[in-house]
Image 1 (spheres, rainbow, N blue to C red):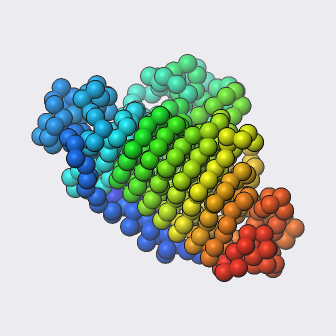
Image 2 (image 1 turned 45 degrees about the vertical axis):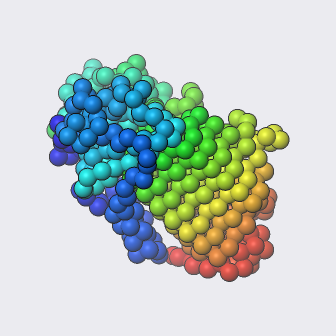
Image 3 (image 1 turned 180 degrees about the vertical axis):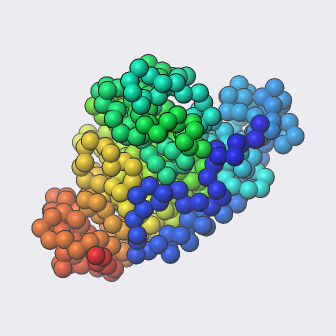
Length: 440
């Protein structure tokens, strides 16, 4: 059971820009980094057993060799008791594996074989291959089989994106409008049956694609993680986690509560020690590309994001905490990343149009350094960040006066990206070596 022809975009496709492409000053640098990430090949360096998952496998096999690989994520979960710290779980490259993974402490999750990174999709099936029925409402189609709220509907891997209705089915009146209730997904489409119009329709349900909560010493390497209506990767109470050489996109959009939608590519929630995010491409997230949040209690320490490309997320990064004594965040480094087009992605459909930026939050932080990053264009601002040390960064934005296009709250000072941007960055961020570019 190999991946269907349309379950994946063409190899090397930049699907991040298929929805609302924005021209950039640093396109060449971003293209080079993206290509490097997509073409990185690694081998597991673990002492324990290797376990294999392949689309051509069999969930009743032993999983110990490529010839006896398991086939699905359900098969992997059914054999979880056999997997122990020091082992590696390897997915065959070129495959698509649908569902969720509950990580095990001490285990390496990676790839084997040749081809594209193996895809882990939170979307349980390609809805272009699913029967759709007409509803009693004109131009509204529906399909069933869902278990929890659907956060997004993505057509042909990002060429079109659905708009989620909040209150009722009758709000759906434009092509792509959708509404979820009681296991049924409703979609407005006046052009005919959705399955006849698209090759791929992916619907992300409210779930975490890879959960690493209460885990330690986990590595996630060389995977493509997409179409989760909740978070892509989430952990709390973790230690020594590495997320490296991964692609992550089209994440979020489900309701967290009656009036709040959410969804981050990578989220660490309270009491984390040791997180490395390196050489990853993260794009088109409803909320944030990479966030760590201590507002539920428990410090977060020793966090690094290096050499990553973040594009078309509402926030590129977020550092969120409360004001308790145990909510500190310490020893944080963001270096050599390219962060572009905050607020320009599909997350712009969110009702709370507040402070889209590349770095948001950051109170009660100590020893936080942001150096040699590129911050390129934000719908509202570039930064909304406190208590950070900036060194040698590049800032790119439209020249605007009298607003907050540099940052609405840099040490509680509201700053515009105007003729005084270089002085503002030197004075309030301490980045005396910053490079400043104005664009039309």
